[in-house]
Amino acid sequence: MSATRVFVARLAGCSVFDPFGDRVGKVRDVLVVYRNTDSPRVVGFVVEVPGKRRVFLNVGRVTSIGSGQIIATGLINLRRFEQRGGEVRVIAELLGRKVTLRDKSGDATVEDVAIEEQGPGEWEVSQLFCRRPKTTASPFGKGPTVFVNWADVVEKTTAGESQSATQLIASYSDLLPADLANAMLDLPEQRMLEVAEELSDERLADVLEEMPENEQVDILNQLDDDRAADVLDQMQPDDAADLIAQLSEERGEALLDLMEPEEAEDVRFLLAYAPDTAGGLMTTEPIIVSSDTTVAEGLALIRRHELAPALGAAVCVTLPPYEPPTGRYLGMVHFQRMLRYPPNERLGTLLDQSLEPVGAHTHAAEVARRLASYNLVSVPVVDENHRLVGVVTIDDVLDYLLPDDWRSTDHESSTKSLYSDTSTATIPVRTTRRTPNGTH
Image 1 (cartoon, rainbow, N blue to C red):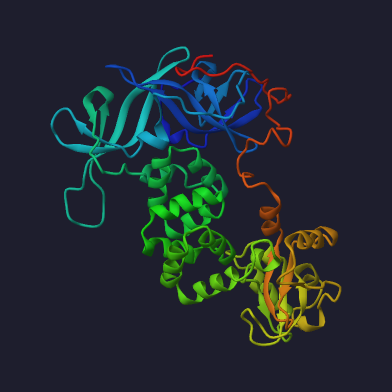
Image 2: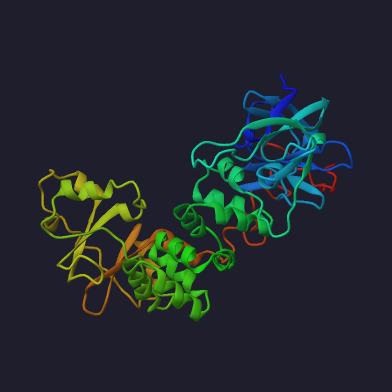
């Protein structure tokens, strides 16, 4: 049974089902259009379908909203969502917006929006859940909250004042970095930059690693040097090196000077290699141990939560020192082999003698062939003195091999899309285009 009033923040991530109970996707936002004096009207939903594609679901095709789910009819236009003029995304643009109460009791910030059903397939904004400013100087606690009707507020827009992105970030808290990157890329440019400003250094670093280079540069250029350097410190050295290489030489050097010395050293080291070589693709943070390290110790190292799966697939054994460039490289031990031996076995006796390292100047295409030929997820990289300088992982090679715009979901021109106009998806595709007011 459909609810008559629903709070939008609770719809974020909500599953969308067709009439047969098959899951179509999940809600990412609610789309409204403003009217002269009346409350904004809901025109539809932004729904993420398999393949990370965001599409438009007309509110007229929604038969039920409630119990943490939305039921839709069987016809959904699977064209990529494009926001039209006059449309406002509630989660991305309205939450966090400042308003002034018409009763002259002051300002408040919108934390949630209630939409209410006015008739079959007709929904509009009914109430706003707002928070007033704190009344004390204490750093703890929040200001009082209030429910107000849309007609009781006036949106406040002050020149030069950024709209708060806190509420939007909270609604995206469950997204993986790659999904959050896609969600941010769908936002208007200014809103995307506001969200980037609000993210923690670590979260923003993870997101930047999943974005195309142009957007990485745009966001980093909006950050002051100290913040930008802190974010680069949190990135994988190879990703940070790729990003700095896109900046002007002057700013790149300034940021390197502000980074933590150890992190900056790794990045400078990687910048010395051409981007299409093993040295340019590699990461300088593999697991490196001595030959006396035991199986138990090796397994403990690969269990670390922050370790990428590809780096945890094997450990590298070298002579001291154990930071790249290390002493002479001895070999790798794959974690599956460690599992077959007792905990006290020395890793020096378990080396994979069949896996040859690649040189730092080996072309990326040859590295890709090596990984494919031997079904590897990583390959060690050595310098001319056979010292380990890093490891190239399968995700590094995929980044190199895929087209520059591979993060975009629209590649119909090069590969057949699962959601092209002629696809036979679970829900039939409509070939009509959406008009600005949300109708078909």
